Image (cartoon, rainbow, N blue to C red; front, top):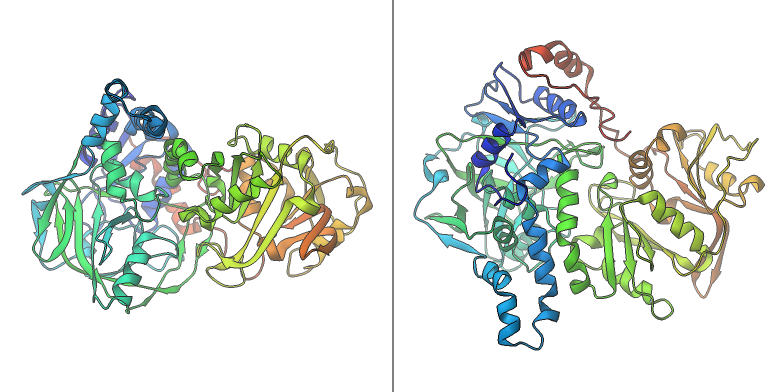
Length: 606
């Protein structure tokens, strides 16, 4: 592989060649099916920390298919190197180092300022993506994958969706899944709180007619990273992509659209989205580890498809953590971390947990120089762009490693006065992929403060003879006990009974789950089975609850009901037929290379 500090690859072909040279790519020559078979191969390989896969012979498709491009932490770092983080750190420090400005200080920052001068796009007359054109789109010729048995059809899973505000002309580059309906039509999964959806709304409200949209596949890997980055609404993602790439991005023009085309992409689907048109989209096995169900979403009408002559179609799979999106998401967080104090001055550090779908749980280190200053930072986080979709936020005022979740939880539980430090906010917006609220896109939020000095010693031993229907009880971390009991539909009041048990008075936090052994097997399992399965306002119980100045004061133990409930979509598992097919053909896929077969149902949870 190239050195970690080398320039990021200029396009997908260059990245594939680097992977091949480093022994991180395996080519599959036998015929495979993009429906269910390829995704299951991908899941098993990523579960074992295996290589990228290039499928040369995809049934019914005119192009090869590549997956697992960023399926390990080391692979992501090898692609982008250390330079982007170092540059972001320097940019974050410029307001201090250049004020007041002087020639000496400008000279000291010449390399950083020079990098900024290379940010943006540059117009070119041609490029690889312009080499071939489907004047009549044939999306059926693309090796589009169907990942899960209940999926509504094939989906573009790495689409780089470019839109532009009709009045300000500020662009947005987002990754919005696209269900392929036919040769010229896909869904467009514009979610709440995302730039593409805001642009479409502006088109409709202003009477601007159909919104031009370009869906790119492939191109500079920096585009993928910038498309998933939680940037403020009016900060163009292509600027971040250019900064990551260390060069101006090459763009070309087409007559039928005002939007640019990234010239080094593998494919570009050119078309429009009508602000008024909707069509049922889904189900889709999503990154929360469950199905998102069928709902009405906008429709993308494809007018033309540009592509390289030797185009390779990129795809990924999402599901129970950790999949490819987890490694990319964590890298983005680390990349942007130096900017958090600039955007939110009271926030010293921030981390969202990919095991919870990122929006399920975040932790923050904040300043608390006067009483309750920490809540000002909490509100700032919950009001900032995509961070506003965070469901639960833990807040501390001491520098600790936020990635070490058990240590964070212990720190908070030692310090929290749940009567005054736990805040539950009902009737708010929620990530539309989280189905724990009363209806799609709606739910609640929770904030728990763990400030100052410790207030209690935490228990670490499971009490005996709990009763109340408790089937199993296990310690996840000091002060946090996980119990399982009857299913939710049989005993919805079970968590309230657990909160009243005298043997549990000293436990500040209890999580009720369907399988305590599974939930405590690892931090990843605890995070996933807990924070993707409860609504703070509806599923948090306490030994006592009182109202003081209209604030709900909860007396511990605090009990979170994280059991599966009847309205929740089902957990994602590979279907038996596909599992048997992949079992039987594994050696056919990899006749010469030793590629380990992981457990796709467990993934990295254990």
